[in-house]
Length: 488
Image 1: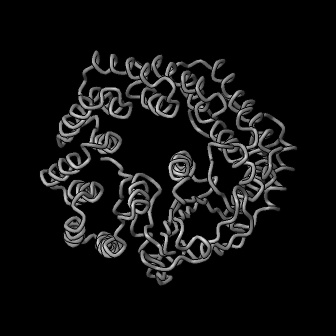
Image 2: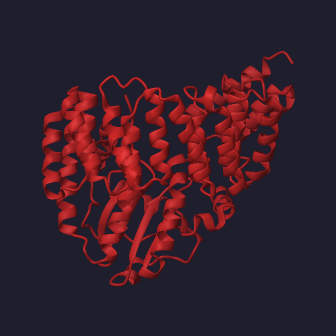
Image 3: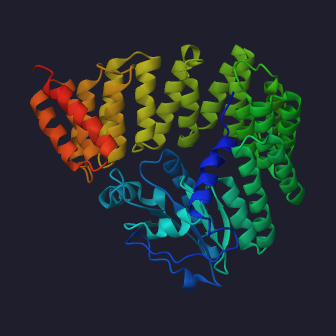
């Protein structure tokens, strides 16, 4: 039916399995381990012992290859600016991987400049990751650990809006650590029950947590998911959705997020009406809020109110001028198969405004490329946008590799943009980290698909020689054999 980033019940299985396997030693209330890293890439080193009694530290684990991590960067930068004079420091820690080398991370951070304006460190031997992530039984990133003024772990979670609330309470001296620890343990019980499909036990644990913290919007949505997705009682699910929306009434962003998860084109269980009632109320209070408007667009489109949703789309694009992130997000929606026939021109207009506001942001250009190719069927314009994208991302190996690979392998683009893929791969190969096995594999494929088979064979041999992962190596060797046997 839908996917909730708020809290996906079954994702807890990974966390719980890690805890059972490794023995969790780090939880809310535990003393924070020292931050032992090999290199401070941006900002000055953070000494937690020296910060004790003075400041708050947010330790976030991330990587350049992780899209949700990259999506969190603007939010963390905003928080660092907001709390810079409140003795709050944010540090992003990443560890080495074939596609996340020191050189690649350094280039990534440099390219973003002030858009990634907090401390960044490289954990070459994994000490920080073992002390925090493994000790807490977590292997998913991004994950943030908040360390309070006393040097204790105050919160662990996804670096989204919940982190904002924790920091606000800590800075104001209102954060109840004992309560947070108690609720975290209840949440673990809920996760354990969900892991084994014991939904009544999971619901009971959530009710226990809600009784301790009645304003928890996310837990009501957790309950919604269980009732809707796993038990199939949609009357109970609707009540949970209504409760969550009522609690989120003063928060337009949260209201839009919840409503967007409820709205579906088929609306087989009647959730859309609940979402639209909340969105209409929110729109009356905040008529210029872009997130509310985008969510209402989806609701009106699902309802079939063509004239209304097209008018709302045009108004919203004008309203969002100067907000490139929202424009780009809206362009993605407008360009989806369900809307692009009627909204293709609007999608292009929105993404053009986003590009104009942030001309060096490759994600906007990537979106424009796909709109020109899929919605407009304009190969010439798409190619020009693709070349501009390559220039804007010239030092981002992961981005260029992903772009080239998708051009070469996705059914929608395969065989249509081989020269563009080669240009992206050759630019990538000149960047820091571009000689690792994965980028070389991409470059070899680009060479092969553009007819340079002998070069492809030699590059693929280098990729095989550099690869120390036996499963990936087997795939690389199979590709090499295909190149060699191609008959060219």
